[in-house]
Length: 200
Image 1: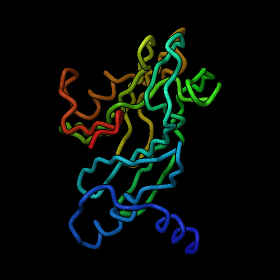
Image 2: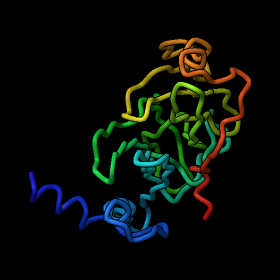
Image 3: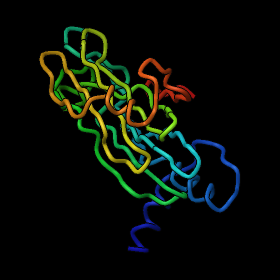
Image 4: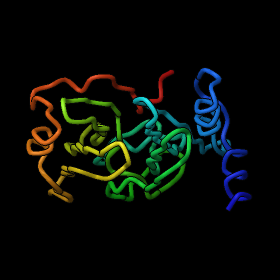
């Protein structure tokens, strides 16, 4: 287990600037960039609240979807994964469960890619606790929408995922969750981080 953990931290490179407390040194190692090739690359974004941090890792292809396809993305997102940490230690990881579709690209032929992409992550707090918020949707020509709430341990509390043709995943009720955590239902999403497009 120790060897596997060392290999994970060795693979990834710094993409943000953190202070050098013991906790933040562990978080810095998780921000190291993953594998790169000429056409594929992976980047990470994160948001923290006290000792809890959510990372989202996005793997992209340097290519564009043909204009007649349903979900247009540039660059193309192949997959995204969520990593939840506490005190700098990875506690939970999951591949994000958006639907995969096959589409034609300009340079790579037909490939399997994510139909919808996480655009933003945020933290919202109420009188009885805080939540990580995930928001996303489809590219141009698509009408998909994704909205999820996770507690700070990485447990999925509420999920609403509607793709271009149907509802694929509905779990829990955001109104009831907000009430439980003492969050006004019309509250803003608080601090937020843009995930896609990558930006700075």
